[in-house]
Image (cartoon, rainbow, N blue to C red):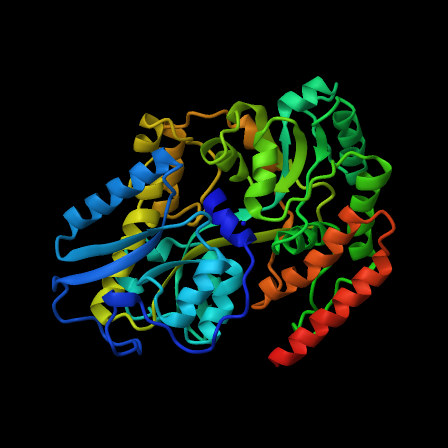
Length: 460
């Protein structure tokens, strides 16, 4: 929910059309049916890819373009004919129409909540016959399981995250708080937020999302931390109208209206809260460790001022991330080429996103504890760990609270294949408690429960 990648996780999604899709001018006419790869692995082939960093992120965009050139040099038979930039990488306003109209790229970015429904609706190619050609494939950790169904593989994860509490150390110091001893309970968060807000105009103790599906996403993260669930184990009923769900909303309502520690601005889209946090006057927000990198690279925040610690009182951690899938109308040669791009750009130690020597030379951050894609004892896992440690240019202490504090906390996936639809419904109670002092928490949860139950029933 990588900041760019994390943003995708945060972005809203509407139900996808059930029809299959194409990959623009680069795809073949026949849909892939797990066909055997071409007899000639060097046959000329053209693919399109997405998720290039925006022009505003000059450093990461430059490395992306460098990787496209290096990839084509290594595989001269493969032409990357089209590269689409996006910020965030997954934006429902562009992704959903392109998917429905058959204009999606050959290789496309997908956040974890959308993986299941893309597989169910036949909108991702079965790549099972091809993944064994990837050198790093055998080293994957359990994150790969999300992209599997009935023994088949439909995509590859390229990053992941677990939630924590992001905070501004400089703001903590100004408020008389110890930046080396961040809050461990929600009561401590509330008390710290009041002190930060008391610094004066513009200071916000704690920031939270209230719309754009990000509100529902953060409600889910907070609910999981309190030990609750959004849907039942069988996925057929809402499960958030509980004391845990009520506690999430009541806590926010109290901080907003009794303590006046959350300010009056609503943060609807993912970038809105990030911009506010990067501005230097917000104390805390929920977020994954990669938020620190996005605050620096995408929003101009002073990196050394931020740290991330474990989510307060967490009994479970919302666990998400993203990866890449292949358009179902791609030819066998395009599938092979697309997977080679994914491996080159995201999965090979020393290349692409794992080229820590280059990242350090370009003053990009090195040393953060992600992406975490491989088993710790595998060749790929050891290589990534060693390269990361050898080229670290950040203070590992900024992430230490999260690394240590999150150990042993059960990871919990997002709520099923209709997570985005659920998040959209849960935006309403989140927005209500932050905009109306007299919002009725019980009624809000009851109304949202009815809507989620109706939505889930319509999918069965």
